[in-house]
Structures are given as C-alpha cells and as structure tokens.
Length: 115
Image (tube, rainbow, N blue to C red):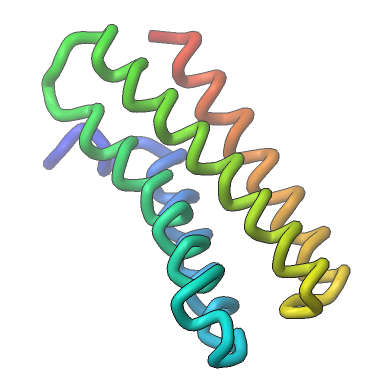
C-alpha cells in the first residue's frame, strides 16, 4: 500500500477530479482546447501532487508537493469562475464546487502544517 492511499485528502481530490471531468465534458466545443483541458489538468494535479509528494521523500519535499497541490486547487477555483462567467456552469454548480474545493484546500493546508 502506498502512503497516499491512506490519506483522506487524496481520496477527496480524486473524487472531485472525477466530478470536474463530468462537468468539463458538458462544455461546448469552443472550449475543447481552452478551459476544458485546463480545469481537468488542474483538478487531476491536486491528487497527483499529493500522491507524488508522499512517496517516501523527505517531509520538506512532501510539503513542497502539497504546496503544488494547493496551487492547483486554487487554479480549479479560478477555472470554475471563468466557466461561470462564460455561462458554462450555473451558479449552483459554481457554489457547490467552490465550497468543496475550499474545504479540500483547507484539509491540504492542515496536512501540510502537521508534517
């Protein structure tokens, strides 16, 4: 078992990335090469940086990767804002994922401080 598999933040991040994938699939073709891949890469990056950072490296290195994960989470929120302003998602979807990513970011920050 890998260390990241026991981390709640990793599982939350993968669940949210899966949900973001479903949302971006509903984007129109004009966003196929613009916002859709950007939001997906950012959402995936949250989970992937948690996993990569946890791989037996030093605590300092794990904290560094958690920092990358935090920045990717903020990027998802910014992408959601653009999607809302472009009428790609509605206000309810924006509000839901804003709250979920805020909670995830706080959890990652808490993990980072505990190391």
